[in-house]
Length: 173
Image (cartoon, rainbow, N blue to C red; front, side):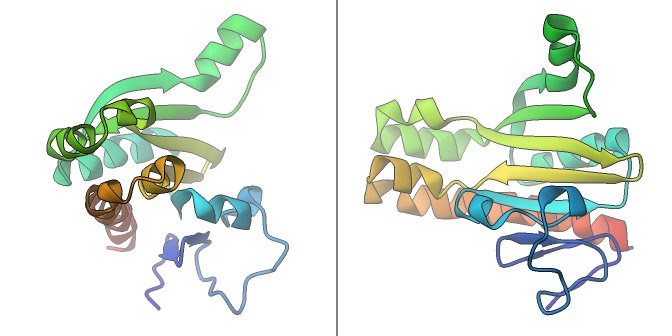
């Protein structure tokens, strides 16, 4: 187990700082920094002890290190405020794309574009904690039933997991 001061990844679960699978409450929810078990089928996440703006900046850099560019950015909180007059905590969706991997996936299944780009969500838990979540690329294989997508999904998952691990490593150094 690799625990770090600011949160860590554990078997698809994002555990809070200082928490191990044995010591975390089984009734944990996203608000107490542990990924909901139902989400483990389609997401990878990590909680950091950093504010929202810093986490967004670091997430962009970590994605870039893994060959992902951010093609789209949706400020969900600003949209909800503008369209519904509803306030919510900072919540940003980054549409991340690794062009070589996207090309491989589209070559296998031209309709896979409906599941691209890889969405990475950065959302504030409170002023000092931010959650970074990414769709597990294996969803492409599960949703389509196309085993030919498995190699590219595995590569994308490895890179996204590495990006999130970079965030964790930066926080602990």
